[in-house]
Length: 443
Image 1 (cartoon, helix red, strand yellow):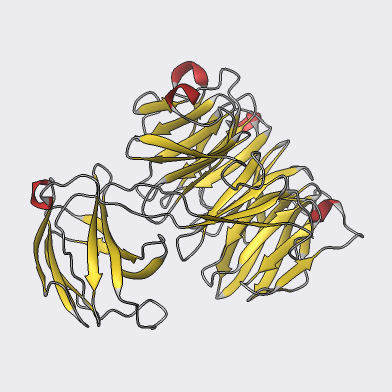
Image 2 (cartoon, helix red, strand yellow; image 1 turned 90 degrees about the vertical axis):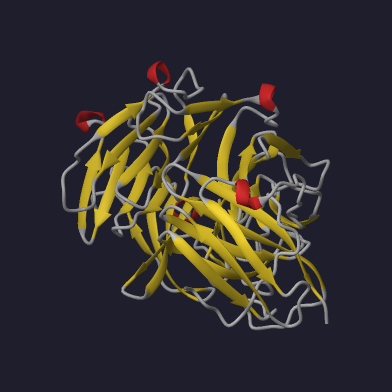
């Protein structure tokens, strides 16, 4: 059994699908914030909730109240930041940035940046100074995508992959890694290359995903965004739509989406997944969110700072940040709704057994039954779609589990009286079950 100091109650036992409602939009630019430039290319949010913005004029951090920027006219190209990744090696947090002048390593403490280290072809094994993308995998290999191939840094050892050793194109646009060993490298003109390298072994595969024999949409095989889900499935953004791939077979398991399916614009250049599991797509014509097998779209008419969206990041409270060509937009109020009533016991692989008391103050309990080995995540959201507490985030064996909650948030603050949503997500390589429930706390 799993027990927590708290307890959870589900008042309505239904299968819930997530519905995105209009929330509150907030905009930040050089006039009302400490952003170094309105041209924001990338966003990374660390586990402490600090927002890091990569712009064409340096790196800016925001901790919720204070803005700080690191830039230097001595190295202007190295502060033209195109992508950001995070690493924590031996307890030392740091950011990696892909820049117009190579790769830059930023040691960080809170929202403070120590002296950066610059990597160029002159002082390292990086393929080119024209870096577009960066990724740190589970082996702590740093991957830098450039205009002349992709370079991996393991410790102090550099290795570069080009068309000479299996890369489908040397012009790399984006990189993503799964939790095992696959790296997905998006390119211009070559589709996606999937390779395996952990800093010790050589490349053991580099199978190409190109238009001719996959579900990719781009006839020119131009890839601008890649997102890998927890279970290994992948989303790809192209200049003619986005594609979802749910197997490791390059020829099977593809689903494509374009403006004909409701996507706001076919040029997709950013992809992210929010805490309830919705997929968000940043395009050259606005933002689309995929939920309940359909798209909901947002543009400047809704409050977005600019329709050209370069990056998307999900905050620790569930709100969403957008990097645009006209500053940063922040969307709060992504609300889960219960719209399809159906007994939860009917879902294959999952059964809600009991919940008590109903309603509750201050404590209550829920039991649930998992019938196959799976990863389980159980979260509480408020009516604004903000994450209140995460009760479970762990791998489960089949069995019956009990979770307790005492109406205290993840910051150890008491919650207010009202309606909340509890959401459980159960997933393995073959199945994905998401169940949302209304909960009511009464003082």
